[in-house]
Amino acid sequence: MDQLTKVYVELTTACNFDCVMCVRRTWENEAFGPMDWEVYQSLIEQLAEFPEPPTVHFGGYGEPMTYPRFLEAIELAKGIGARVEMTSNGSLLDREMATALIELGVDKIMVSVDGVSADVYEDVRQGSDFGKLIANLLELRRLKLARFGRGNHKPHLGLAFVAMKRNIDQLPLLPQLAHMVGAEEIKVSNVVPYYPQLEQEMLYDRAMYSLAFRSSPDIPVMSLPKMNLDDVTAPALAQVFDSTVSINWLQSSLDHYTNYCEFNQKGYLVVRRDGVVTPCLELMRDHPVYLKGKPQWISHYQVGDVKEKALREIWEDEEYAAFRDKVRRFPYSPCLTCGGCELFEANQEDCRSNTFPVCGRCPWAQGLVQCP
Image (cartoon, rainbow, N blue to C red):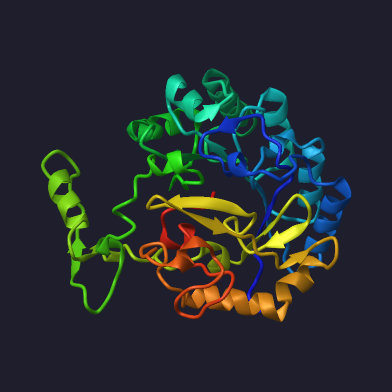
């Protein structure tokens, strides 16, 4: 039996922002609110039953720091010896919160920063205050320096950036921001077009089809060394990426994250605020996606409910284990790059006789979207 290594816990679907790329904008019948405390307590007890407690990552489709008993939730998870991470917009990470997170030994915080100037950041993350965010991150760094001195200490800080046409010019400014606030990691992802206007923000309409990211016996391989990326080389490299070769860079193939589901390869799952367990973020809730001007409906896939069955039983269930094995083999049709038939309209079946849920249309599994 493969090991469960990380559990994404959606403490709440409430959020104090209204980000332009958020799937919550498409929800019609979903109630916004926190996970019942009793459900969370039970979940932690269930995680303690595993031989080695998996990492608890507070994330999903809400701001975890708005959870009424957020610090108690961390304390419970730490109490069973679990590593604790979170994804946050950072708006509530003031001095009091930062001090508490340091005291509790939180391992990692990924803060969403989709702009490095106030106008761009606040345009993407509506309801936000860029100046307040930077002040919070600088205060976290100051508190860590005062407590531990120089070096990389908990909570480790990362920055998450969703790349779109409206903010891609901010990408070169991220390294400077990371140095300033003491971030150790910058994770860049692409936008998922949950509604038609977001399709116009995509930066991967050609990358979806590019042979550069695919290996095949029928495709020549071009192996590239280190080289400058400047006005001289950039036009040539852009043409290579749009050509008919598969690319290896420093002997590493760029197709590694093609037909690769990180959740299933690395042993992750999601527990929604209502206790429902799903295999990944993409299959967490029903939602639309718009590609090539056409809508497709992604239905959620429930593998269990921690209110009804222990998480270890859910993880070890034969049907769920078989699903994980199948996704690792990835026998699905390439629906994301095809999309030419009526089966494209939903994730119910594909032309290779795979049945719900089919994963060939998943942008995460094609290396276009990265999990925090």
